[in-house]
Amino acid sequence: MNPNMGYLVSINQLTRESILSLYEQVKKNKLAGFSKVKPVLQNETVALIFTEPSTRTRVSFEIAAGKLGAQPILIQKDGSSLQKGETILDTFETIHAMGCRYFIYRSAGSEIHEIVHHFKDRAVIINAGDGTNEHPTQGLLDGFTIWEHVGHLNNLKIAIVGDIGRSRVAGSAIKVFNLFGIKPYVAGPKTLVKNLSKGDVQVTDVDEAISKADVVMMLRVQHERKDVAYEHSEKDYLQNYGLTPERLKLAKPGALVMHPGPFNRGVEIDDSIAYGSQSAILRQVHNGLWIRMALLENFQKVLS
Ligand code: CP
Image (tube, rainbow, N blue to C red; front, side, top):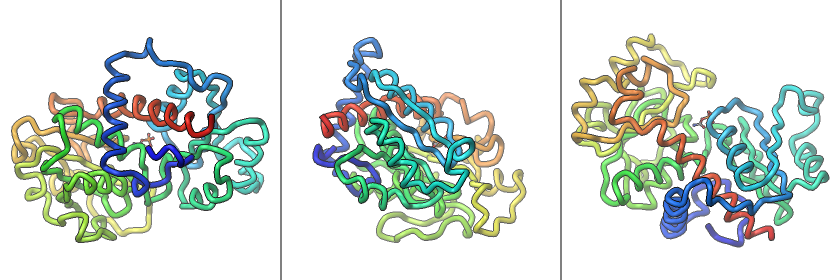
């Protein structure tokens, strides 16, 4: 990470070198184990402001903050003064006034840019997913999971399949892959594969994307985002666009199967694959904790 930045909003802030340095740090930390984690955030508070639902990102940041000695606090729309009409900026300022200097923010919109600009160097702010734009810590953990498994990120064939145009996970993962010279193959229903730059990805059909792939990344159909007409039944989706055992055979033997979660069982991924021998889904979750701990550890140096 660039040590002068007190925020992580987009993968655009990072370089190939800064990502590799983070991955080496995480590899070393994982080898040392949880018992060697230093409480570098003792006496700090980490505020998780989540106005959209989350399990993995929220809980892993909570655990990461706790392991580093900080007190994590959770603010959600329900039950907070956001419900009474307080603005998000005023919520940030209110919590900051209580001595909190670390914020993890998930939202449906892209106001994180305005919040970062407002706070400047008074707080660390990490994007935990801003609408359909980016989810940088997910992109970093996805890249790390591949790097750890394969040993590098060079010249890999990566397929990303499903609800891509609206996916903040894809938004960040594609940027990570591009930094390593990888132009992922993307495929899915036409209405869901959109808003993509031809310079960043290769749009194709599902079987072609998966064929001889080293990594197959499936994405969740985001039923909660109702902006696009989508007309397949769940069974049709699995047959036409989902990862079935037959389709997985098209990939390289032993190809890594990924999904950021949560997944729709039997829709974008067959039940037998989700936790099968090629699946890295739970490893992604586990790595998310280590990536987020390392990021918080690095940001601590910015504020101290
Ligand atoms: N992958 C991901 O962001 O999951 P959550 O929504 O559960 O945090």
